[in-house]
Length: 112
Image 1 (cartoon, one colour):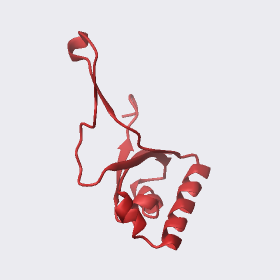
Image 2 (spheres, rainbow, N blue to C red):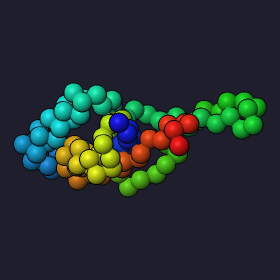
Image 3 (cartoon, rainbow, N blue to C red):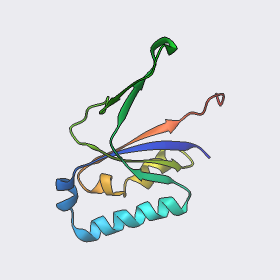
Image 4 (cartoon, rainbow, N blue to C red):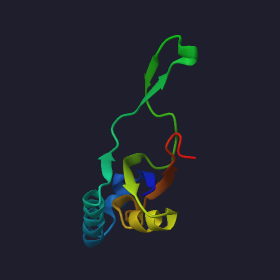
């Protein structure tokens, strides 16, 4: 089954202004995804890693990407297709609590 990487963006203010029953249902959707085999995690502090021409590792604290909302978490989910992936993540906390979720199809090396 195809895999998708999701990136959830959201902030505490958006979460807090969402009705508790909607948040509870969104967390229940996360639990449903985990029961289906999804790997879900809350975003920690990022580190950028570079190794130009394999001459030496450079690690710098901080995000490379910038967004109006902070990255809140990640997931790897399985879905039959992109439409099902959209349906599955449309009810998770970042999607319903005034944030956004990106879905990236995960193309595994050698699968094309």
